[in-house]
Length: 198
Image (cartoon, rainbow, N blue to C red; front, side, top):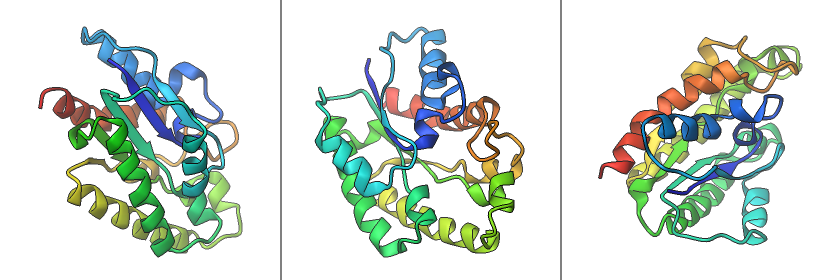
């Protein structure tokens, strides 16, 4: 099996060891379950917005169909003050590309919600309005969740975990720790199981 993970710092695992990245943790768990799967192909870089991920995908040689495709993107759109409408349109195009890369099998695609960076120590000390951050991220996530529903793509809501455990961060006080990523991997597991046994 082959797994493609698309995203930004949360997918590449800024500030943690490679083994602690949540896509890598998912591959490790799949192997423990006896499923033969290659190392995750990760197309993600810290700081990317939706349009920057799209441009990077244009420059990447893919070998579809992938057996699993994940998508987690948008926090940098919100950080830079971009509108929900713009995010919705760009996310829709990325989601459709993810489905195409999965061989048009939408059941093999899953999307993680954007975590709330405002809940972290960095967010609390940023001088930004953390309630506004939360509201804007909720609007982004609602838009993405609705698009997933129309395309029958699994939605994995990890935002509550980011708010419940704001101290589970890397040394920079912003990006998640391996412990937080373990929660995300666990929350994504039912979607993985459903995808593989459809």
